[in-house]
Length: 87
Image 1 (cartoon, rainbow, N blue to C red):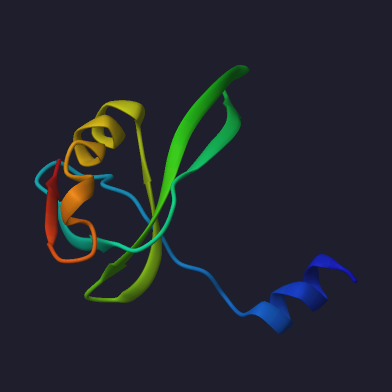
Image 2: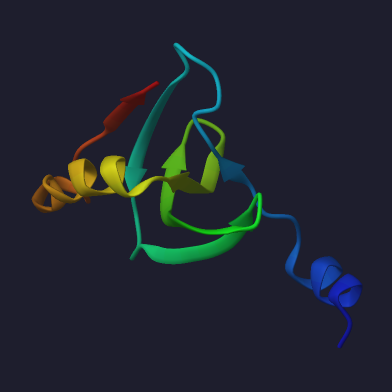
């Protein structure tokens, strides 16, 4: 099956980043994190994809390892607490 066919079948996905200073995201963690690897300016980079629910619905919140570690400290409250990340 081609990528185009899969995209039609699966539907679109949403990603969330904190790309601007002062940007805030309220979210609830709903799944297991995934290590995302890519290339930026010829260097291999690693980000963490966190499945979350926001005001806009289900999204993959892409964060760096530092924010990921801070979120992980609060794992006991993932199913019951709303978290807020601010850039």
